[in-house]
Image 1 (cartoon, rainbow, N blue to C red):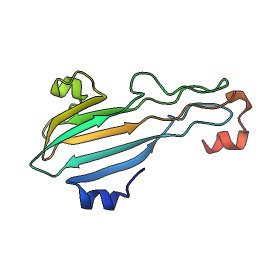
Image 2: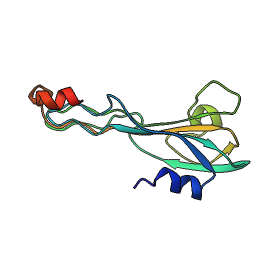
Image 3: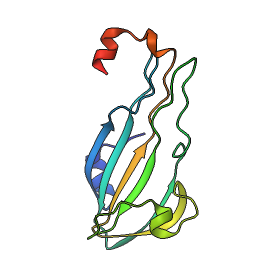
Length: 135
């Protein structure tokens, strides 16, 4: 379930900088998989602890009946004053970049979370031309 941006920003010390679909992340198929969703946010608290758990960061969501895989998910952090985006294994020494607890985030740090795209269903060569044009 996705909270509206305004509700999220009211309840939590984060500013949402972007909340968008990621182009070309739905797996090709007669019926294309859903697009990945990206949320970029900036920490407004002096310090907080972040816990995270997701799947499909290394193994893409599979397609069915000749449908192709969707795009992988991810989570990255850019520390205030840095240009480099890193996963939480690189940045904080977490064993897993997709499942961890108590990573410390500071005011001005930015986080990008990408929910994976969906796998396609059916042979992409059978996709309706009008639907393909809309893609």
